[in-house]
Image 1 (cartoon, rainbow, N blue to C red):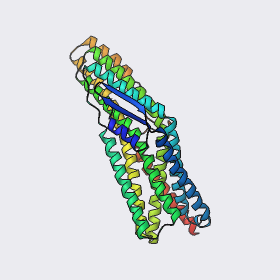
Image 2: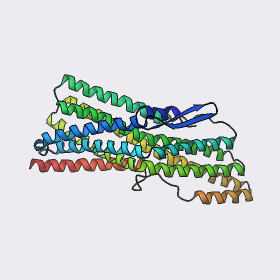
Image 3: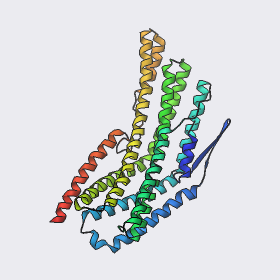
Image 4: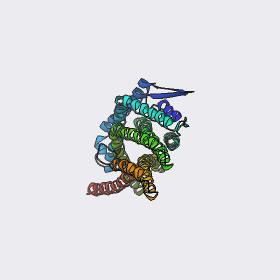
Length: 367
């Protein structure tokens, strides 16, 4: 069954508008806190946009003289715009998230009927750990900035408001991306369950039922790609921009002997972004691996049937393997690239390239 504690935690933390309740022999899926969870983050986005625009207008003549200042404007404005987009997108797609959860529940009912038992609740432990890390890291980030505000006169009042708003925006944005990880983890677990059924050399009836459940998982992967593909693309761009700009800014601060508190706060801000993105890509990569294991289990079963000279059963499995040989739907960022660990490696390479470009602009600034 669905890990209702993690799902409801997303709702409590303003990320989604769906909750679920379980009882003995029943479950209830419903919308909750829809207005609160989508309007409150948009208010923070609007506040950050207004303050950021005010700061930019007041200091534009000074900002245009330095690449690091322009990069910071790009960083904060892109994060704010991404937060606005993500909030609106999740509001528009809330019914599809609901349908996806219904399909997961339907899969569990079919699986339990197939094995004639009531399976235990699936624990989305990886997603839960990432949520806890995200909360802990942003509490640390906020504490660092508050300490800087109190002990060092580094930031002006408008900048303080902007930074606080952006910390909340970053937390909420990354939390919504973890929602995609939540579904990827649940699909991975279900592929693993089907693989175990096949490995036990079940009868034809069970194998056919397993194949139907596989089709259900395939259809759910298509929905996940549809509803999370665009937000994952935006998330990838934000990770790319934020990480590259922070690395570049840190190098400039170190060379120029900038305040230690500013260097420390920027580094602490960057770490959870990279870790969250890696964790998300890793969860999608694991989904691909688990699906591949399911197909391999059927192929192994056919080899065993051939060795045992079970001709009719081997022909039956051959038909199934022909079906499984077709390419399965992949979760992609709007079809541009597949979400997996290779995407993470490519982004790291792009970050290094972008930092080098920024330093070239820095050389032009000197001339």
